[in-house]
Length: 231
Image (cartoon, rainbow, N blue to C red; front, side, top):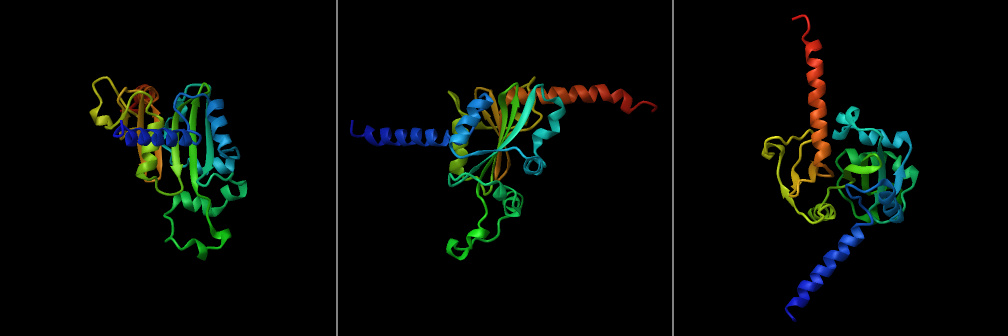
């Protein structure tokens, strides 16, 4: 029985950590009200202004397939600071935050040598694609590199009764396709994940990914005759 105590303690701490992280992140398949309720309780905010959202969507892979999104759909962006404080709009709109997301961070200096006005806002940006009010794709974008531990937690939140394994579109069986590409797949086939870079992870439904593929192929097939007309 004594030998089981460390194991039980470790399991308890893992469960506790998942519960705490559960207040920050979303779940594929959740409705918008449930996701936002949890996020807002953790001092997260919704980015509503166009000038705050448009720039942050630049280069996002999901936008390549926006014309195929089933209706009604909605893309929403959120922000959650690392220290649990509620972000201010002027901090989100500052050039320092843009630099934190889009460029390499400058060499670190001791905190005591940095004036409070210089400190950039650090945290997580969350992009969610809702189809008929339900999350089908989520991008977790951090102001700094995502650690191995954070990646483990993110995937753990989306594990359900399955588990994740490394894979790619080249390993898909016949009859299965991918438009977005992926690095990880949930073994039950429900979810796929792709590391966009060292600071961003995209998780999405396999069914949504395949729908994008078939929609793109259908469009290309329909446009081909007009494209080569006259040759």
